[in-house]
Image (cartoon, rainbow, N blue to C red; front, top):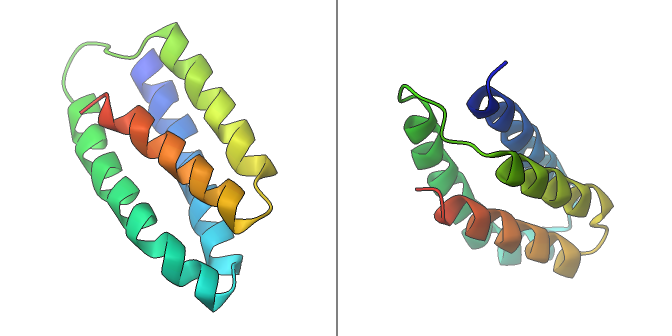
Length: 97
């Protein structure tokens, strides 16, 4: 498996985890999180398209950073922690598109 494929898997799994945590949040928390999560998903779609191009663009460092972001997502228990994880993921993706 090449690095781009691995990144698609890691990032996709991380985003699904974020969406599940979002859906499990209270209505008031979801209202606060929706705009940032929506922006993240839009950026992710653009990043997915970029990863479809031929040639590997993902580095070992980027894979490691995505692993660290995933750990943040997994440990996010409160809205503020989840917002931080969403923001970090958005920032990571934004530098790639």
